[in-house]
Length: 295
Picture 1: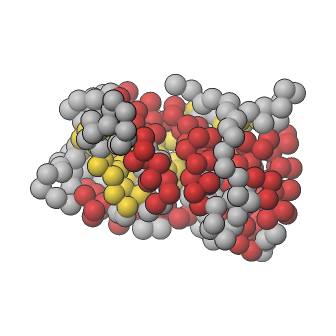
Picture 2 (picture 1 turned 90 degrees about the vertical axis):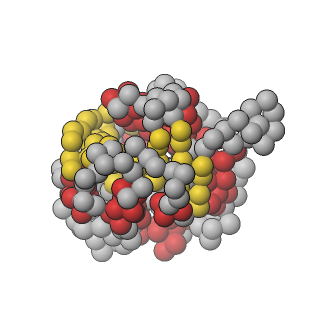
């Protein structure tokens, strides 16, 4: 599977079809994430699953499982999958994907999904041999507390189990980095936009070379290999690109302090260099993953 240029007639709840910043559009944002944005990381999921030979022997716990696409891909390889997430609208979509209530597949899923952190999976019936945290490190909302979540998750995993952390690659190889700086600047115009800046309320910052290793060390994990994967972001048109990027949550802080129309205008301008003659939007990116081991 590779990223697909997509355009969907989704429910619209804010200016120009974007979710309202007051939270009333959280369901629409989750749908935009599931139907537009989440698939951009499919190459990352595939690379990790192939490298770790995910299959019927795998008992996977996904931290920040979102709307469940990565879990669905692992389940298709025969893995037993479980996931936790703090975003209830996204989790609701994951349940629809993995545990259908109607049709021939109803009742066949063994996926276990819970709203909250890994402590929700603490039971004698669940003992994992793979933990993933694919949501890219560099998003401040996931960095804060992620080490603690990883520490909890490792107590539920067998000794020596792989723990996979995902993150943005070098900023110079991620076209989307320039677009995300819009969110950074609008959320706090006083901040310097450089590669060494500390995490801010903007929800995103450029990745540093050792982000994943530092997180693994804080969580008490032992690094055991890494890799890079091309994850281009491709959209059918400019509105789809805007909706996809707004669904990530990385623009939420900007929408809280700036006029939504201004956020849309500046996001559209930042995307313009990546719009091709046929109207599609294409941004090449490289993502990085680290495989660490529980001790």
